[in-house]
Length: 143
Image 1 (spheres, rainbow, N blue to C red):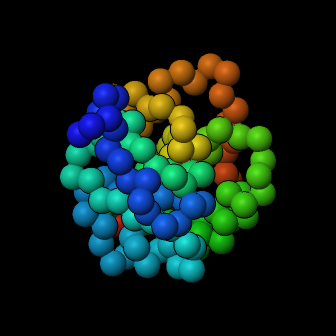
Image 2: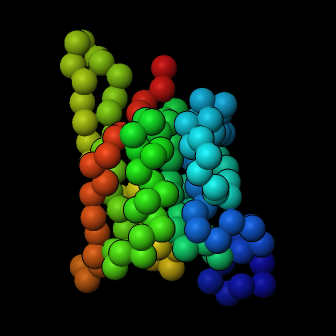
């Protein structure tokens, strides 16, 4: 690559609001869970940081996940409001294991210019960034 920062350049993608980055191969249930949300799609077998995009937001989701209907309805509202946030955290609900459903909260949606750590989907510098939790719905674990 000619870029000295070794960025993966996906700036040719058409959608300028949201790029969904699927870690693994996106399946029909995952892609269908986005409904009418307009997005560009990147599928990566392995996480890579510093992906260059022209979209305003980038969202990371794993191939065994999908959006709940409530989250699908809320996402376009949050992303289009032009609120002063740098990232959004989403709740993830797992399938029951031994009769217990677990919930976790983690940042999943970032402004595209936010640099992430090389080994995780987490900002290099979270101090000084403004984040918000989207409480409408969940990222759901698929079967």
